[in-house]
Each structure stands twice: as structure tokens, then as C-alpha cells.
Image (cartoon, chains in turn purple, cyan, green):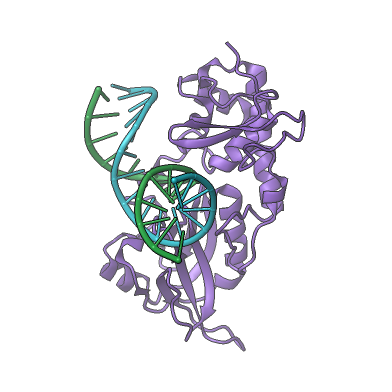
Length: 282
DNA sequence: AGTAGGACCTGGTGGC
DNA sequence: TGCCACCAGGTCCTAC
């Protein structure tokens, strides 16, 4: 499940291959992969555009175009972006194929958007704004930016009584944190996932802030977490899964205290935690 | 206004 | 072996 570290890894592997290249006419295999505009306008608008840069905001991949527009990609659950030879046929899960201008001495290739569960989306925006993507327009602060501090986190959490785990998944409070890194950050800061956000004490919030920054940076260092699907643009798996303390380890012993790790459903999502290291207060 | 929960979607897994 | 229920979860939408 691509979260901030996986999307950042994708961006870093896409950038050197994509910058300066020009898109051909996209072939849309599944219309629902296009968020906006409608597929015909998407193809007309993207063809002939040259990439000037590749960036990230939250879990969104931002591909800047020379005429001022922007191609936005959200991988959601199982989305992948990969380079394939121009003549390569689509795989069963290929949703969009975008031909690329050749680089000197290189073979002709295309950018494939592959997505097993078809939740992922491509958008073409006329400028650097968020356009119709409400999720992008309402994103909270980037957790690895200097502007994100323990104070900022404290202010965001003080306004909600939802469980802290649920609040961390709210992209309008902090951008880019998903289920895996939220569970890891809560374990590292010794906070029970069901704790109401506004009930956290300043010391806990300081620890949580430091843990969020730490787990995200470690995830990037290991080039992301791969369970089933994640591959970066060069086709490589991530390596962070072996460093996870709680996520996906229900029933196994806690590496810190040996207690059996537990699973709890909050907001319809699994939370993995250690009841001994992360006791529920009150 | 804030919160909760369902819908979307498909492949893998485990139980019978 | 075959079938089926269940699970994975980011975001949007609706209902309370």
C-alpha cells in the first residue's frame, strides 16, 4: 500500500527517466483509471507535452508539464508506474499506456500505469492548482517539511475526539501517513491506537511527532515497504517490511517486551499494536 | 460541524 | 477439489 515513503521512492526513481521527455498519445485500456478530464480530453491534452519535473505532495505524484499543466497520479492501493518497451503488450492489470519520446541511444518505451484493484487514478490539470481533486486541495502539512512541528501536530489533534489512529489517517491533518506508518509511529511513541486524539498529553504528542518523522524517514531510506504489490519505477521491491515492529505481525511476540501483538479494527481499518508497550489509559 | 460507516475493487487465503 | 466468506485499505460519499 503506497504511503508517503513508497510514493517518494516512486518519484525519485521516476524523475531521472522522465524529465525532459515528451508524451505521445495515451492508450486508455480502462476508462475508470482517468479521474479528470474525461478520457478523450485527457488524451488530447497530454499528447505532445514535455515533462519539466516530477514531485510529490502527500501520496500524490505530480508530473509538471512544459505548458504549465500537471499530470497527477494517485496509486491508491495497488497502483504501479513502470517503463516498458514500446511494443510490450499490456499485462492483465495495465490500465493506461503512455508512449514516451526516445532518449538518445535508448530503445523506444512507454510508461505503463498498472493497477490490480483499479482504485488508482490519473488526472490532467491545466495548471499547478488542485483542480477538481478535493483530496489534493485539502491536504494537511507535509510531515517531513520544517513547517511541520510538534506544535502544529498538537493543534491539529486538539480539535478532534476521534481515536488517534483514525486522526493520523486523516490526510487533512497530516499528509501522506497511511495504515502501516501510523501503526509503527504509535508503537514507537507507546500510544494506544484507540486513545482519543484530544486526550493526548503534550509529552505524548512530542514523542508521536518524533516517531512519525522517524518512521517515514526510515521507510524512505529502505526504499519503501513491499508486501504484495509495491514496485518502484525501476521495478524493484522495497526493503522496509523487515523493519516493521507491529504492522502485519498480529499474534507474533513484541520485539520489545515479548507480549503477543494484537489487532484492533478502528474506522474499518486494522490497527496492530502491543497491549503491554501501548497501554490504554483510562 | 464533526463523526461513522459503507462503497469502490480484485486476488489471495483459509475453512468446510 | 470446489466453493464461499473474508480480508487487504485510500479516499469519496452519505447519513446521522
